Image (cartoon, rainbow, N blue to C red):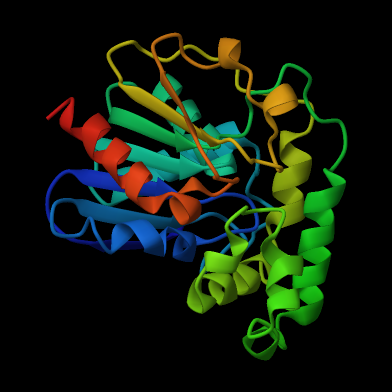
Length: 262
């Protein structure tokens, strides 16, 4: 399956993988600062963003990892750094575990899969967000001008929801509303968690927010499941999308991690 992939800039490839119900547009707060130093590669997962959904494509994290690796190979991108959020962070860890010769480093932002007890059903709050977004996306350009509407859509994702700019919120609402791969991805991760080993030769930085209500600390941030050598960071006043709430801090950690192997 061919994925929608946008590339720009020159230098070491940085491959960005978004989360479930999101799209490559989620990375705008970061990538506008990286194109002058790196080759930025933005990927839309199946049924997200500009990539159509196919029932023939398995949606579990390992299958998506293999799909992304094949698409990168087709673009002759054989060595790269990985940055992922939520499901995308889990996929990054899968790629690093299975293709250590290709991965230079990993920066995982609020990665999914680090739970001792795998989910057995869809997470109710996330399902509600998908349903709400699907019902209001045509009205979103107008509704997002109202504080109450912005609060409903983003309070559970970001403790700084009042500060999120209009374009970012509109992109996120449209991405969720149009993510035909959302429920297939949810169903494909049920009963699973990340349980592989990653080479100590691959620098890994894992970043969670202290206010992550989607993957809370008590149940979804199990350090024993992460690679032992991973750098583990908790950012203050930050939710499930650290690249939105703490863009400067995340940019700093990306550059530190990438430059540690240059």
